[in-house]
Amino acid sequence: MEEFFEPSLFQKPFLSAVIVAAGSSVRMGGEDKIFIPISGIPVVARSLLAYENCGDVSEIVVVTKENSIGKIEELAKEYGIKKLKAVVPGGSTRAESVKNGVFAVSAEADFVAIHDGARPLILPEDISRCAHDAFRCGGAVLAVPVTDTIKYGKKNGFVEYTPAREKLFAAQTPQIFDLTVYKTAMERAFRELSDCTDDSRIFENDARKVFLTPGKRYNIKITSPEDVLIAEALLKGRDSE
Image (cartoon, rainbow, N blue to C red):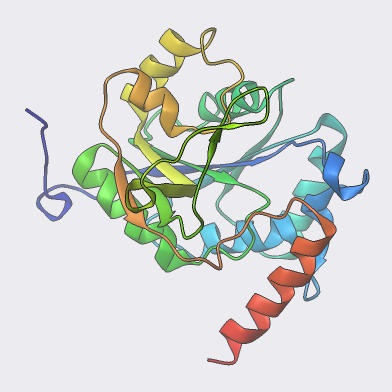
């Protein structure tokens, strides 16, 4: 039977955020996407500001490329990021980068929130909703229902089957987990899931349940030049509401 607890009955959990910003930006034509401005503010700075302004987050660790560490630290000073604990180098895969970040959080941390640095439109209230579900359930991820029909394809190019759309969700970040449990699950699964691009899969692989916190469609990931235009349009529309 799953164990649940009501956070209000306990001291507020210490939540560490690990912002992963160590990607290769291949689809951006070589330009490092985390430093591209979205309405004047760099992508990673927007992600940092959301976690800085979230009352449930106690500290921030950024994982980035070795040659970008200084630039991240400069941006943190420029935008008043006081929760920044460390900026650490990433690994050769996303899974290795996440592991580097997770093992750099404070010893007193209870939960860890893993976030794509290239999701700059996340809001503090989105983080808090996911955090409160994680505090209650042990693990939670922001997710939105899939609106397109999904086809599962064979290697020969033909459709193998069509899964039921009403059961499909697109995972976003943050993905938030009990830190002790996640570290243990990560160590057990690291070799098997070394190419894993979804953090909750580590938790699921350890027979742990993950709660789907309703996300927002504006929480897009910047992966191509078109996404920059979309993000700016979404930001403009959101700010005018």
